[in-house]
Length: 326
Image 1 (cartoon, rainbow, N blue to C red):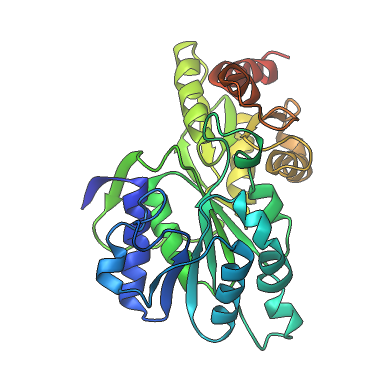
Image 2 (spheres, rainbow, N blue to C red):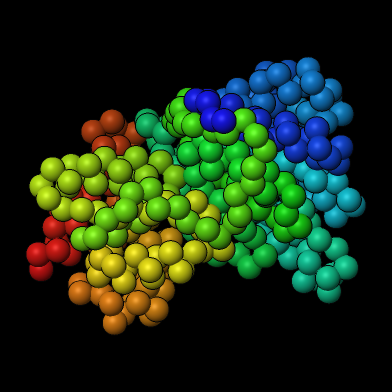
């Protein structure tokens, strides 16, 4: 049976269920305990699990990420929350050089079952240092798996899967979507990594996206429907591993693809998808794949420039018509 809950509640439920199931799971990060989390994702968890398992840390991302990696190598299953992935840049040495390489550097003797999570991407007028998008950064590193979703049902099922996984996983959320509501089953469930979701079936063009850009994708598909254009919309949900098969199967139906990606265009997720699909599905494409990205610049502060920086519904409609009527 499903009920409507928010994204923050869904993530909290997933973490709490896994902490009840496995005493080795714990949460650490800035303000996750007494303050109930910067975005109230961990609200009430300190009361239930206590200060040994819900741990407030100093403002020292490199330090507490390292503690998490060490704990994971010694049999625990840490969840490390970053107040924003922009701050995780300070912890990249632990994520990239230690967590991601533990299994291979130890010749399989040690695994590193750790989840690094927090919000990524633009959140309005937060300017350059608080608005970067990190999926392609993390997905570029062998040994890391990357989740990116703002759908409450998916977020709960994926974080439960991530906590049980033996590899380090980066979970990307969105601070402007923590209040978004969605249907989430009451019974326990898991969602496998590497399996995209078809949010809308269609025949004319495939629109691919992830995280909060899915809102843009779905809104554009609704507008296109009014003009008789039936778009199929795919939510990647996980960036690495990437679900190539669902994308190829969709191109076989629609013969056209538009990819929406909030990150910068150079070497981003959209670039990888365009390359992979033109390699695996070239014979089915009737037009080159079109990519929509954020502007190739750091995000300005002015609200008018924020709007100009990000992909929007009209951009998507124009891109779709471009691949349909070329």
